[in-house]
Structures are given as C-alpha cells and as structure tokens.
Amino acid sequence: MTDIQDVLVLGAGMVGVSTALHARMRGLHVVLVDRRGPGEETSYGNSGVIDGGNLYPVAMPRDVPTLFKHALNRQTASHYHPAALPSVASWMLDYWRWSAPERLEDTARVMRPFFADAVGSHRELMKIAGAERYFRQDGWLELYRLPQSLAAQDRRLGLSKEYGIRNVKLTRDETLDLEPHLKPAFAGSIWCQDADTVSSPGGVTKAYAEAFAKAGGRIVIGDAMTLKKVLGGYEVETSEGTIRARQVVVALGPWAGDLVAKFGYRVPLGVKRGYHRHYAPKGNAFLNRQICDEDVGYVLCPMEQGVRLTTGVEIALRDAPATPVQVDRAFRAAADLFDLGEPVEAEPWMGRRPATPDSRPIIGAAPRHEGMWFAFGHGHWGFTLGPATGKALASAMAGEPVHIDLSPYRIDRWK
Ligand SMILES: Cc1cc2nc3c(=O)[nH]c(=O)nc-3n(C[C@H](O)[C@H](O)[C@H](O)COP(=O)(O)OP(=O)(O)OC[C@H]3O[C@@H](n4cnc5c(N)ncnc54)[C@H](O)[C@@H]3O)c2cc1C
Image 1 (cartoon, protein in one colour):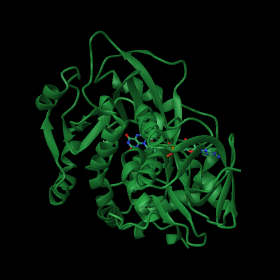
Image 2 (image 1 turned 120 degrees about the horizontal axis):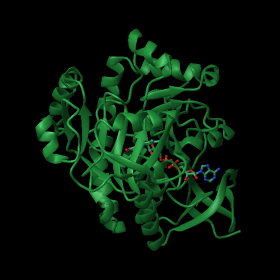
Image 3 (image 1 turned 90 degrees about the vertical axis):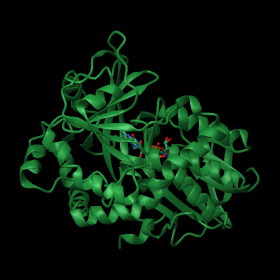
Image 4 (image 1 turned 135 degrees about the horizontal axis):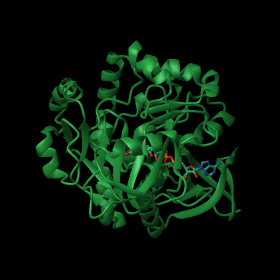
C-alpha cells in the first residue's frame, strides 16, 4: 500500500488526462490509472477537430423519409446492427426525443460556455505540454455538395452570429483557394473559423499526459473495475499495488457506465461507434485542414499517418465485432472530392463515442458518494471538451470557483 493520494483519476483519455493535469496544476497529488497507455482508445482515433464554434449537437433525423432511408441500412453516414435494436431501443427513443428542434436549441445554449472555452483551454495545455507541432489554428471546413444543403445552414449561421461564432459561408472558388487539391464536386462550404485541428489526437493526449508526469503526477497501469470505497476514500488495484486516495474521478469514456453501475448509478450511456482508416495521398495532393463531406457523412483529416477518413455513427452493442462497411462506402464517395491512395493499415480502427441521449456530458460530484466525481459521456466532442472539462472539475475538487456552471451535467438528471 502506498501513501494516501489526493486524487485517483480513472481513465487516461483526453478527459481523464486533462483532469489529472489540471488537478496537479492546483497542487493536488494525483495518480492517473488506465489499463493501457494514455490516449490509446477513443481519444486516439477521432477526427482531431477542436470545434469551439460548435452549436447544435449531432441529432437523430425526425422526418419520416430520412428515417426510412437510414432504416434501409445502406447509408454512409449511419449503419446499425439489427440484432442490437432491442437492447438500444429505449436509448434511441430518448435520443429521438432530445433531437426535437426546441431541445436542440436548448442544448446549444446550455453547452455554449463549454464550447466557447474549448480552443482556449486546449491552447493553454498545448503550451504547457509543448505540443504546438500538432496544432493548426485555422478552422475546419464543412463541404456541401448540394446548393440546397448549403442554403439550409442559413438559420444556423444567423444563430452563430448572435453567439459571436465565426462561421463563414464560402463559394466553391473561395473554398478551392483554401484547399487547392479538392476536386470541385461541391456547391460551397462553411469555414468554421473558431476551431483548431490537430495532426495526431493520440499524440496530443500523450503530450498532455507527459506534461502531467513532468509536473509530478504519476501514471500507472491498473483496472478501474477494482475500485472500492474504503474509510476516508477509495482504493484501486494497479501494477504498483493498491493505491488509495481521498477523491476519485471516473473518466472511463464509453466504459464509465460499467463502473458507476457498481456504485448504484444507472446512466443511459450509449455508444455511437465510429471507424477510421488512413490512406496515402496520391502524388503531391494534400489537405490543409479537416473537411467534412456533409451530404455524404464522413470526414477527411490530414494526420501524421496519412489522410484519415473517419466515419459517422454506427449503432451496435459496444463490444460486438467490428463491421466497417461505412469506411468502404465513404472511401468510394471521397473519390469525387480528393485523390486517396493506398490504405496505410490492414484493417480499419474502431472506436466508441460515449453518448448520452441529451448530448450533454456527465460532469460533477456523485450525489451519494463523498469524494467521487464523474467526467464522461462527451459523445461526438470529447476531444474538444476534455481540457475545459478538466479545468472545471479540478477547480471543483480543489474547492476553487468553477468557471462553468456544472448543474446541467449532473448524473441525477435522469430519475
Ligand atoms: C470516428 C470518431 C471521430 C471523432 N471525432 C471527434 C472530433 O473531431 N472532435 C472531438 O472533439 N471528438 C471527436 N470524437 C469523440 C471523441 O473521440 C471522444 O468523445 C473522446 O475521445 C472521449 O474521451 P474520453 O477520455 O472520455 O474516453 P477515452 O478516450 O475512450 O478514454 C477512456 C479511457 O478509459 C480506459 N479504461 C476503460 N476501462 C478501463 C478499466 N477497466 N480500467 C482502466 N482503464 C480503463 C481506456 O483504456 C481509455 O484510455 C470522435 C469519435 C470517433 C469514434
């Protein structure tokens, strides 16, 4: 048994690493526990967009023709396992309810302070970690093939203006000035300027973890599922023996529900699975930033390994075998826009977005366990929101003023 620590952070994805680093920066003695190295799960394989200008959550379609198209299971943007539907039906119904237009507006308003803080909080950790080499500070592009799809963004652009978000509509030629290697098979784009993008989300997460270790934090391999409540705190089993701390943070991303259930908290934490594969660009073609093909539903991301193609949502059981059909569909569609060469790895990567039906994460104190804190369920935007989450939670744990109101993110919002 080692000395008693101040904080155990369980899970070394972007959310856990950022929380550990912020807690250490506030002078707390922190041990970060994961069953593998930092940033090797969901925080490794995402699209690497830090979307400070994000407004509406990714919603479920509600009109019958679109729902019917998705039900046929031949879309690129979505895929589902029919066998999973009975298990996920109640989560889907809740998600459908939370996708009503007025609820989306409400979530946009509630989440705005978090997104508004996202780029600044990343840049703060970027400087501390010396991770500048991964960052591009010039936004990302939403590409629209159809003029009517681009025109349909006008309402959102109006609201963006009200919030002071810099989303700029570009013609096709203006888009090609920014990205000269795109093929002109689109009507125009929206340049989301309040965003940074990175060339290695896993590399950024590891860099923040190294900064945590340099600042005196400890990173150990261990199984979070061994967590126990003991007198005066919590204990977990690790490769370095039992570690005890006064406080514990559950930041296990898509696996968080398993642990909190052991402590009696039932949360509707679903997973939206997603895939990626890297391709060598053909010839000297390159992209300057991440580009979403909005009418088809995938993202092209210039990464260290090549151009990473990331897919939309797959509804399936978290641990069911991978079925990367969306990767092939997206690869074929991408040929209209950009010349992708040979795949870099033999098989696509699969990840799981930890998703709540209301698209709001779970952040804050456990109502029935003193010293236990939650930070998970960030869905499509956990890479973006990790540092802002870490800052808010570490302030709360250290008893300092919290820069963002955490009340909308309570775990007991579901009765
Ligand atoms: C295809 C795709 C594209 C995406 N694109 C973006 C994007 O562009 N921008 C964005 O902001 N977000 C994006 N996301 C979402 C984002 O990746 C996630 O929201 C985020 O990575 C979640 O971070 P996390 O720290 O909560 O979870 P994770 O990164 O999954 O970390 C959880 C950690 O818990 C550990 N763990 C689990 N169980 C145990 C256990 N029993 N014991 C010990 N450790 C355990 C895991 O090993 C892991 O390291 C994307 C996701 C996908 C799948």
